Length: 429
Image 1 (cartoon, helix red, strand yellow):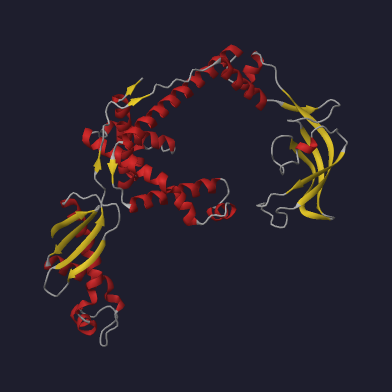
Image 2: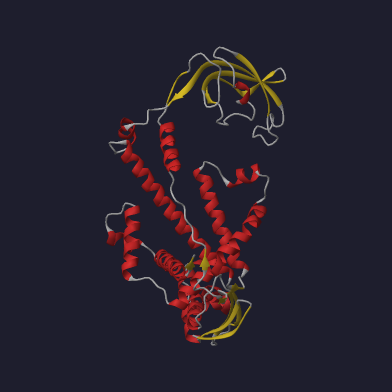
């Protein structure tokens, strides 16, 4: 195999690759063995006709297409490695020469990773961030714990107010007609929860148990039931019970009930410790993001459109998975927001460009600084993954990882170390 890099222009590389006559002949032989069974030649059992007879009957080029598929991928890959190219898309193949007893010559045109011109990436100045934990924050966490451990008890004789839980029966009407899905009995409703149509809950504040109330609302224009969208409805609501929260006392018994601690003081100390760790991580993440953003802004890259489109593809896949976990799908989401798939993708483009530029910038820094993964770091990462997936046999789990998965793990380690390097090299003040 002989290859020549003709040019790289606008991140497009053009290769001319020559596959020797002998190599191409081997490809034709493999193709013949694979597809000979397709041919019915008079005088021969199906699949048993010699290659020369098939070529005489159908033409000498009958096996060329399959032979090309046999030899071109390996030849192309060898040429890419020889010229140290980093393709980011599939190549376009154009056959230049294909004749009997001559080498196969083809051209491959492929988009490659762009050149990254870094600006200053050491000594980046960022503002020092601090998020001290206050007593008020600790008290807020404690109050949240009390709220989540509250019990609902019957309210003494009084009108309803926000945060009360009501037990109600209701019937909904549009005009004089009762509509489907607008009726329920013994329905629980927390006032202020926003579960019902806007305005419904507000009209139940200040009423008493045993009251029968008319509640008038207007359904939103984009309401999922098209027959009700934009229409005014009247609900006949019977208030059967009013319940209110009873918060537990804030004492040592409360600490024992909701945690592994014996005293309220120990619980408070633990809450403060967790809030401080959360604040530390916030400072770390925000500092990293600011450093990365500034380094990326100072770099210059002509990003190929295909890289942006692939990033958008990945972002759409991730979003679809999130929707699936919520019991939704992309079609319903787009219909609800009156968007086409193309509109949705267009809305992701700027973010996708920024992500690609950031990734390429970090890769360039790691390349210049010689940042790579160690064997110990790789083993530790794989061990953590095995624990995450509850795989006890570390050796078996490691063998199950494909080349792409291992490369992804290595790249993740390198990017993480590169970010650490940039932050350590920055000036925080």
